Length: 533
Image (cartoon, rainbow, N blue to C red; front, side):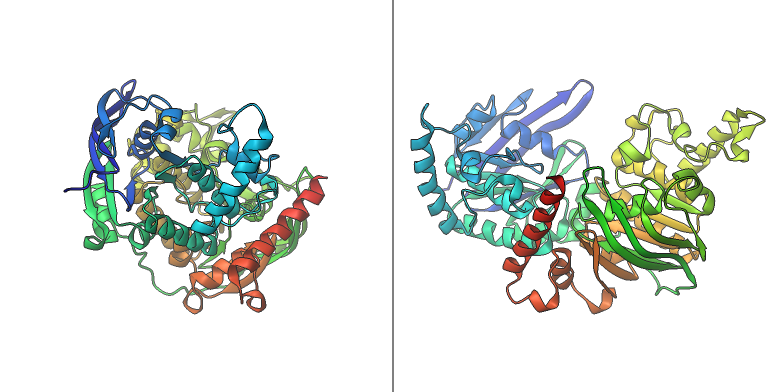
């Protein structure tokens, strides 16, 4: 007898006004498997999973769970059907304990004590069965990100989920934590659970899934067995053309030091020291990559160099000291000195979303004489320059009159890159260059970074994507808790070593990597908690 799919979606369609997010989607997910769903930004993956979990109601189509047609009007109905979802941004109450978060919304009655007692026993058994060890009495705010994710999985299992949807689950994990998560998923699969994994990382798809479905422009283009495909084939299915996944570059030929940073420190408005004596040197004609889990000082490093926040210590640009506070320390002065900055969050820091593309291509440089006619802005010249930049950087659609918010994430990023790179800076600071960017745009952005390096520019690159760090960097520095843990040459290290450094673990502590990671993360979190107190 043929086994019924754990999940089957038939003819699912969903539109938001004129935007068709999902178009006649059919997909089958077999029980006891890990099924990956990939696609470019805006391909419709999250909308489809939101329909399955009851956040949206499909305009057309049917959902079958274990062979039975099932109506899922809300998340309670999804949970009742045995479906759980672990969101990219966790849905946890920070000042509640693990135990309280697990039972929240699933209490047995008005009296909490029996619910907590029963949940404690179930939680202990689930932790043992699925390698999800976590202290039930610990406050969520005191847990590392990896442990918080375990709590989300335990919440779903406590509600007796047989089908787990995970949305970009490794986006905020160190490599060691990601490896541990994959072991957990292997254990869940071995126990007969069905897992749907949404990710943009082709390496993870190839490593952990049994089957993968590819979405493009709201439709389902293919479902294939993972063992019978390749990253190159999946990328082509996602984009509709061949995509260069490898960054081709010649060896760097570093020149003189351009950016020299010594004992850089910065304390945020909460009293937390975010930069704790950072020292770095970036040479002409090289990419220095900064690896680290988000929130360990990388953002503040770029902001301090770019003149966005005050700092102490020393920054030399071509041998000349830059003010770190007071007059001459702002972003305008940094740009005038030859430092260009592509911020990590393009939508809040890199662009003014309601303004047009041509206006955004000149922000920060609008006082340049080339942009002015006497006391007025030369709008005609700016518009023509914007058109030229959009053509060179393949911004789609190439319409300078469109508001920035009307472009996709990848094209918004190209607008920011065009504005900064076209100023011919001595130093380019670039944060998360391909975050939320389609795979076709990633190829273009990587080529532009290497082109600038080969033109003799000094590039400081921050990325949470280790694959990207390895592909683009000539040297790699690792940050943890506001400090540089070490520098490595890409050819003389690997993801395991960098992953431990990203968690604050030195070679002498690496005997038990998971325990060492936990200890380092807890130490960092306790330091931040003391500063807040």
